[in-house]
Image (cartoon, rainbow, N blue to C red):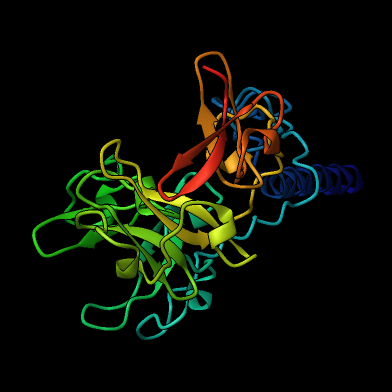
Length: 294
């Protein structure tokens, strides 16, 4: 009887041990969800790769970018030339030089052009622009047509002008050399003067007929009807008997041409008063002058 009881006790102990070992196994499976019911790892997940990580490079790095260096500040945009406020009344308003003609503009890419509003007093300034091509004496409609930048209107003709000292410096049709106060003398449309009175000058034959600061000069260079008047200008330095090419070369303002020689003359009474190169004393227009030998 005691032996049976001992066997029964041992049987219960074995059963109890089996039950306990089963509980331990169930507890281990619940603690590791990656292990299936049969103790194997689930399919579809590579060994050693974390769940949710794609195959290939586990942590791709971006390509290195070149160092751009220090940040560059943008260059400021050039400031446009300021527009003048209101109508132009002075060349200073637009930073330009005042002028009367294109000759006052040193920069050949500029021309003298009126910058005032229409109807206002003219404000001629040196500004960028092409110069005209018309020469002195040629017809023009506006200053822009002329190489000089000066177009002057007359009674019957409007033409390009040029600076002058005498009417003889002016082209045909513009043979009135008129002084413009503060500017200088310019050619105006018209015929050459018939008398010195028309240009407020005195008649003359030589420099000796004029005041010291003036000289006698042909203001109208006509072979048949020349007109000599006392006008401003430097007298020549050639003494009597010196060779000359024009009256302006001589102290006397008289240059006389002979067969073989052309020289500065002087007044005389007889041949003995004349230099060797101009040995003849000949009456000319009411007074006697030394002439070259025939």
